[in-house]
Image 1 (tube, helix red, strand yellow):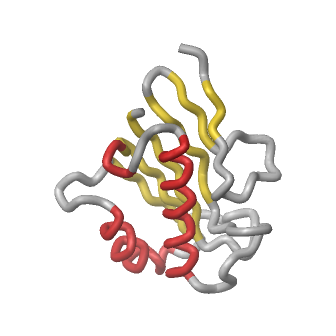
Image 2 (cartoon, rainbow, N blue to C red):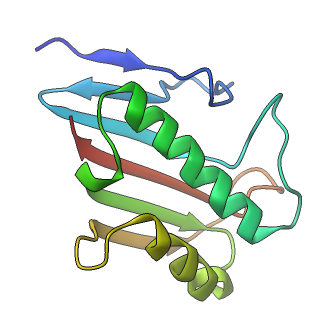
Length: 126
């Protein structure tokens, strides 16, 4: 199966040299999604708003690929501040069915862009 590049009109296109998502061999690999919406707008300093926007971006790309959150098998969460871990978990769990959470890794790291408070990438079945 040839790989297929996935984009969504609902997700701000990246300026970096990457594809928003790629479908290959029955899986969709979604690149790390920042909290951009519209014309590269972001909720400055508002972790909760950024978390919800990141999830909206993931959902849009998954849907465009023919998948959804229930089919996610692996998630990587990158937080700018480790102190946001509890807030992230509270919001994160509302997007998944309890007991059907994907495997996940969470790290804290410099985001390379001052306004990014988090980024999430995932892999899902198509």
